[in-house]
Length: 344
Image 1: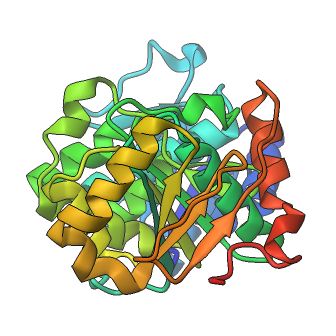
Image 2: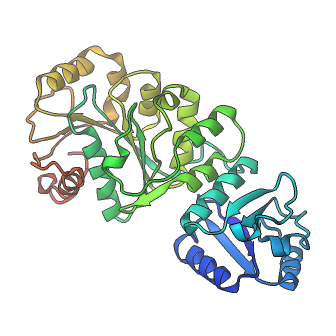
Image 3: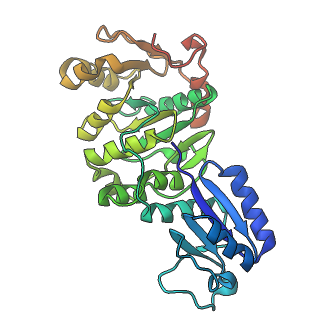
């Protein structure tokens, strides 16, 4: 369930009020319930009539405003009022930046002072994990193609890349804030993680996603408890959660296997893929515990014969160096009988 933040924007700049209000209402109404005012009388009345989670107030109105009922008052700041006296400790948000960036900053700041009111184990999403014991088989292309197919099917989709080294920039155009801030909140166990995820996530091609961590170590230090909390948080925000995993089979990957409803095991026509996949199926006791969830995806025109698996999907070999072209082609593959990603 998406949590809406009740936001009040108060500034004497009438044109700015209209611009930001219209933009938030059009593009961010799923996250923000916005109210505005551009005069002192309107601000005082608004603060009496309703309790707001966040208030963005410019310096011209701030000194007259009683914000005691606001959970998080913030200064709507610009170079024009840099000389004004601002109460110590008051957070600020730059007035002149992308509105999507302002929205993200509001949600991120409020998440840090907000207590989560949601059960962390309450989920609405179907969780699909995409994994392979070997790299180079097109695992991420399959994961993104699957996500695209779910968007076409009318679902809300969240793509979560949990590779050791992320390939998100190869598939999504919009850059945003690092997932590391989410990791920090999970580790410290304070604040509203769901709201923070909403604030720092991006959306491209109809798919929500989180950008990569600030550095490699941020991903490596996640505990299985952190993984559980992150997945359940994302699963509460969408219809379909697609998790793109690294090629390891460590405790964190096993935790994802445990939580997943479906697991796409990607293979390709290479000696390494064949050997390592066979080892996983025949020698790893993890497979027996997840066998009913697993569908093998034979990618790049691969032909496989795995008696251990009842469900196999065959995808064509797409000869292109354009990662997105590959994904779009796979997501519309006729080899799946006109209905993508059903167990066969």
